[in-house]
Length: 131
Image (tube, helix red, strand yellow):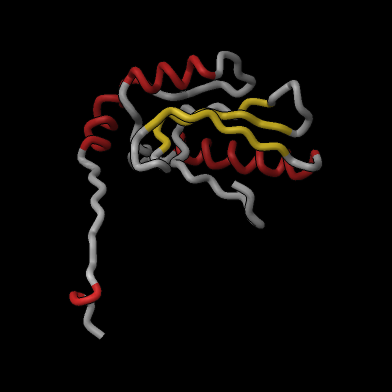
C-alpha cells in the first residue's frame, strides 16, 4: 500500500523472514501465514521496493528490531495459523538470509487462541441511531 508513512497491515510473528530480493536493488520480500486483510486468514507474500539504500536499510533494521523484540518478549507471541498455512508460507519463500527462530512447539497454543477470535459486522439503521 502506498502511503506517506510505511505500515504493515498484518501482525509480525517471530518466525518471519525478511529476504533481500536479489533481482531488484533495495527490495525485500517476506511472507506471513496469517494475513487477515480480506476478512479471511490467508498466506500472503509481500514485497517492498525503496528508492534508495538508506531507506531500505532503515526498514530492514526496524523489522529486525521488532522481530528481536518479539523473540525476547516474555508475553505471548502473536497468533499463528495451522500447519498447512505455515508450510505454504515457508514453501513460498525457499531461501533466507535471515535465520528463523520460530518455535513450532507453540503452534497448538497459538492456534487455539486464534480460533477464539471472532469478527462480526454490526448493522446500524438510521432509526436506531440517537442524536
